[in-house]
Image (tube, rainbow, N blue to C red; front, side, top):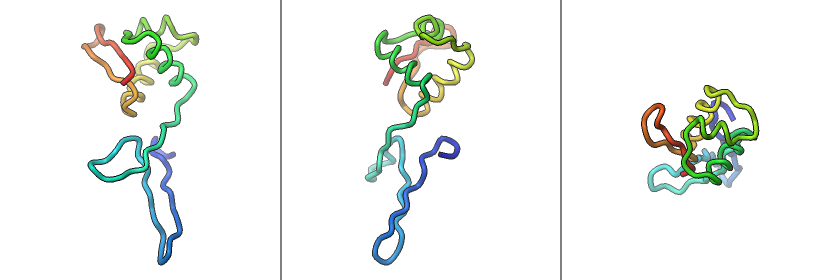
Length: 101
C-alpha cells in the first residue's frame, strides 16, 4: 500500500487482464470496490473514544485515550483519519472539535 493507496487487483479474464483500482470512497457514479481502510491501533483507539464520547477537542481526546500520545502526533492522526473520511472537525484552532463521520 504505497502512499496510503490500496494495492491494485489484477484478474485474468478471457482475452486479457482486468485491472481494479480499489478506493476508500466512491468515485462519481461508477461502481467501485470499496475497502475498509487499514487502521493502526492508535487510530482505532481514537475512533473508539470519539464514538463513545462524541465531539471532542484534541486536549479532551488526549485525556480520554488510554495511551500517551503527543499533541502533534494526535493532530496528524486525526488529519489522516479525516483524509479517509472517518472523522471530521468543526470550529477553528483551539475551539476545534473532532467527531466520527
